[in-house]
Length: 478
Ligand code: 4AD
Ligand code: MG
Image (cartoon, rainbow, N blue to C red):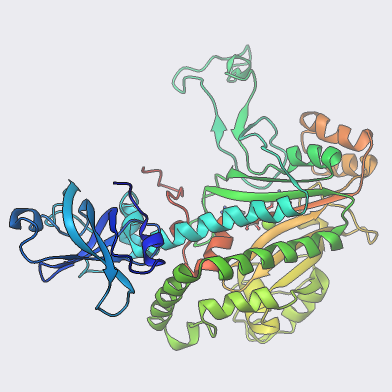
């Protein structure tokens, strides 16, 4: 018989028809009630074994984690919590699960840290299946949003030869033998002998390549994995993360900020409208986690309230200069509570400052713009004041920076001068500079860290728990 998904069955009414269900046992009680889950929903299906209908030796194998397929009548449930249940007439075990060895038992709730060590099994937990269903919904919504607005999805390369973005340290890609690489006459490694005939790396961002298509198709976006070889062991950094980078011709920094707000609000509203069951579960999970923290560190809003709050409120826009004034005069700065004190214009903001602005001062998402040129990338458009660039960062509660972007410098002389000042490899950027020689146009774009978005939407505190197999310093298991 054809298998029906549990999500579909739970949404239907008792039909007394035979149905077939496959999935994994979550619990088996009183030698009679199987709670079974197939990942189509956070809800389990209850299957009831009629007395003496299934052999005792089979029933004994029904432990948490066992995979089975069963057939039975879909009937009204007498128990509370579900409308329908299945009265089992046939049951076949597809895969046994040794209760002595299976690490995911109901009684001892494993910690998130421990689950990271068994990432191949954590997919079987409520938390991780809920997070990944939300992650799927968000990826789908990203494409919906841009498709509705006539943006084209461009696949930028994962392996690149350009190392000029300056976004972070890179992972080298090579097929040379590390123990015996070919050398040139000066004794240095001869990358002409390497696979691509040059040095190559995993991309840190698809932006520069994305710009080439924005200056032809007007509005494009990329959505792919990006790699940064920084040694940052934080709850917000991964060595491999997914980034969405829209790039738009004829947009200035203000159009860019508006798009960023519309985009984030669309995604959050999509999650509220389509991920209700999972968000309810995750909201309860997040509350349990909050309750275990000291009172003064707890968040004032629940997960669902935080989502509604972002979906419904305008983001606060303010310039870097205004932000510095607020921070300089803030209580934690005066009382020396910040780890990095704000004393002068020009310093880079740390996440403690970003979170102060968002969570304490404005109590809503903030878009900071017009940053000092010296702390931002070479390609950002130089403002008239001679010291700031048209950069923008979107800051979210609990997360800090979720989006970084800018209007791009479209003027050939200005960008060449900046490249020279920063001593960047001008010759590697020849193609990027040609965009400014041939039919240049004002344009803008930004990058949304997909995992930081998923953290915000699911309320998971550690970024390692919102991607199936996290990559971070010292870890590439699986
Ligand atoms: O601010 P970033 O470095 O900007 C860029 O890469 C630009 N090229 C984007 C653009 O204008 N097209 O990164 C953008 C976003 C950050 O705001 C953050 O959300 C995320 O990417 N991000 C990371 N997420 C997880 N782990 C890391 N190591 C991240 N680094 C950045
Ligand atoms: Mg940034």
